[in-house]
Length: 224
Image 1 (cartoon, one colour):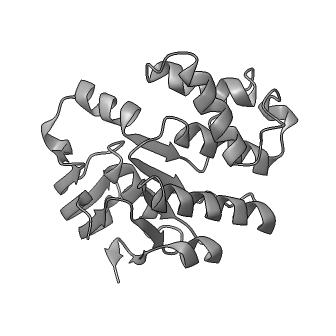
Image 2 (cartoon, one colour; image 1 turned 90 degrees about the vertical axis):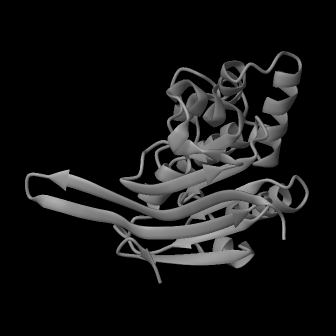
């Protein structure tokens, strides 16, 4: 078995409010190996998105430790955490977050600029990522000229363009038809098998679950 990319140990997340505490995650343990494709499934409100946010360093646990690519996320500075997110992590959110005045190409290319990737390498990475999600002919279109499914694929292209070590995706095929779902499934399998990229997917979609190396069922903040 490959080395570990993610290790969660006794991780809990509690949200406090005037009406009392809400336990989003309860003493979670999880190992994800390099190149592994993991599906996280569960009903709405089970803690899936919270789990994804904590593994990716976007949120902090109330208790427990998360190690990502050998780095304990609780022991690094904000600047170090930002560097990890820019250079090692790709994230696809349920809300795509595309910039409305930029084309599909520019939305993807901007992330590579931020990551410090130079031209012409940046140009090649951008075009390759858009080709991989089936949008090579739509690169000049702005978000309002794209369907919801096409916008979702631009968001996926943006996340994979910088060739991250690990990709976190939250319902990445929710707006896609069966044909484009298959394109994304094939892409994720290729990223895992050929590029040794680690993928953690929150999904309800059976085709994505079918390609996963392992499936974790989350219920009320606990793996069942």
